[in-house]
Image (cartoon, rainbow, N blue to C red; front, side, top):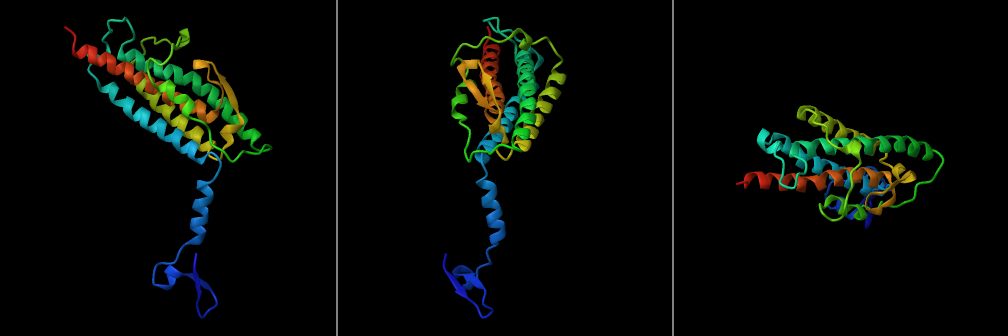
Length: 219
């Protein structure tokens, strides 16, 4: 950067000398420090994924009662049941994430955080239906919960994800890893774990669309 001296002995950039507004270097340095904090890009990507995925899911609650309750020819879940299943799965994933968050924050008091980012690409396959066989545990099977309650639960779970990411915004989530057996993912950190929540929900959007298409074209 080119500087020029003024009569008071302070320094100005060339642009400032030509009449441009002065550069707020303190603010610029603060922004740079925030952007280059460990796992900043990871946190932003996981956050956006949570927001975008659930924004896409909420309109499904507004489908007609017939569409929501339609049982597809393959005897799979109805759209209403799929929505409930998403919240049941998120419930158990968030228990692990919440416990892990507390441990990660405690470890951050004595452990260094690598200047790195999480590999989220290994989880994108989770969001695509039909990419692998997925056997769901019985406790994640839908039980017929009222759809209004399912919607309330889902919104609360999205907020819980956001709160966890806020607590882990400085890379602390990298200090705690959990084994994920689905698709043999192995040990993943808390950012990947929360990202998994979004990808799992995204996977079921395709299933709901398939149900809706079949319902609309039924004979």
